[in-house]
Length: 297
Image (cartoon, rainbow, N blue to C red):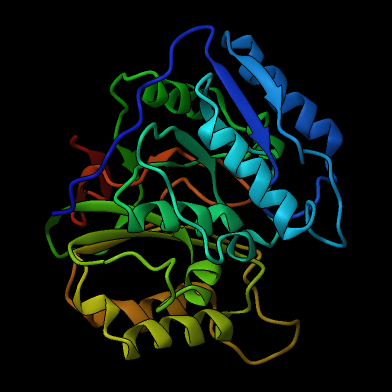
């Protein structure tokens, strides 16, 4: 099992830095509410150099976004990096990128931020798959508590979904947005998945697209390396009106059921609803009889 480097846990009064790794910021009201959540928990906020920069659909040029990430990563006073939003673009800024392991810190985000999280995982550096600033204020209280509890070094409870049967699996946790992860397979951003428990979610992808992506993973032999699959929310993944199609649930069953590994679906993470924090690299137990995902270490 991979041995991950875990950044220091956060303390009341720590400084956290906000950057936009992907798409340009549009949801200013939601962004301000997310900042207030962090302030209300006692953290100081620093706005990174590109938090409100725009370059087409990106939050600045690749150079500007790389610089903002580098400044935050190397700032000794910064204890965590908060991603403003998802969108698209994280893979672009990671071309020819390398991570310093001297003073790792938490990076928190999901969706397109998968590129950043997976890049860190190639260096066995842990990060946190969780709400970005523009979605944070919509989280229920238990999910917010889970986020801060984990970052501050406290235990977090199991999350509950629907078990598919097949017993338990132990492995290291690797969450991802399915579409973003699919587009970085077999690149320098693709970590070694041996022994992983994948946690997958997606949004606004038609069922046949989910089928196509999962078929690619099957053809690449990736599912032969992993220990289990935790499925979150696949929101707004409906077929076009009046088209003949499987549902996304039927696609997931068709493409995954016969892998003979533990699978749990309907777990509370992803877009358009509660997005429970999932740390990368921790050892977890996936119980496909009880339908639970539990962090062990």
